[in-house]
Length: 390
Ligand code: PHB
Image 1: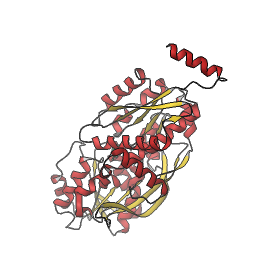
Image 2 (image 1 turned 180 degrees about the vertical axis):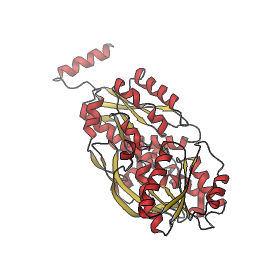
Image 3 (image 1 turned 180 degrees about the horizontal axis):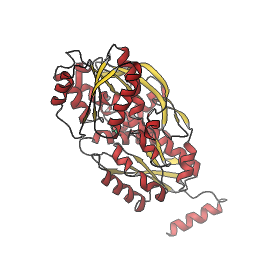
Image 4 (image 1 turned 30 degrees about the vertical axis):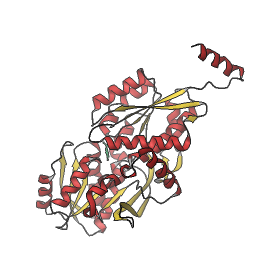
């Protein structure tokens, strides 16, 4: 206390220079359990950002506090967000891998006077639930719309769609169907599987029986996607010539070694590939590799977190470290910068990120390592799902 008073007096004596505060950022994500690698990537992205940009904004020191929600669990997410706000006095809430965990927290933002920066959760509607939400990841509408054109252009006219039965899955199903029908294609059947599904053999049988030439699929990245793509290969769908079309959640880089040669040539559309060729991405990957320890574990949630920290730093700067959630959010509306993924803008109206979406193909490098090779760019994509979400 005495120290505090002395420091405050010193600050005043120095001509009213701002007193250095600690600004706390509460990050909620899966840090244990089956999706722990995704949470580890949040932390790697944050650590990489702070290693490159420092831990201070102006006079203020940024401190990140982590809370673990291992699987989609809205009640636990909300309880932890409240604890972070009330006990830890965080000025920012961030992270959120799963949509339900983000949705559950939007009602407390206004009263808590805290912005939410979403590093992953990808259902379009989340940003409409509170004016204090900003998102630096992607939506499944954004990533699944271009793959519909890719599928049609590949000569596939009849597709069966298979998604996890919750927000981002339903959005992906609708996005693909809208895009594919616009081209002239037909979605012959739409299967929604419980999020907890881990035996995909019966689904593979239904895909075979449907007579479709291709399958569109979305599941949240993690053991789920690895299991699904393995089942697709092992149940003979690939060898039967049934093509798989998906957003990049299904070929996250950390899963590629386990998928092996069977995934070679698989095409997906997504906002980020670790192989993205730019100086910004080289700097990011070098810092994130160091932060995560094992480069083979690096995957896309790290870039959502890295850019999310950029947004939070800009918010802290704009508010001079004072707690004013609306002012903080207003300050990043229309903000543009060059992300490791390419040029991005926080759309002023939706507060969601506008970005390039890339068509990528799983390839094997001269070093024998599998990677997502970018082969086409769909520039400056906003979120086509927002009209549907309203
Ligand atoms: C989500 O729950 O919104 C979510 C999770 C993982 C993904 C995509 C979306 O890969």
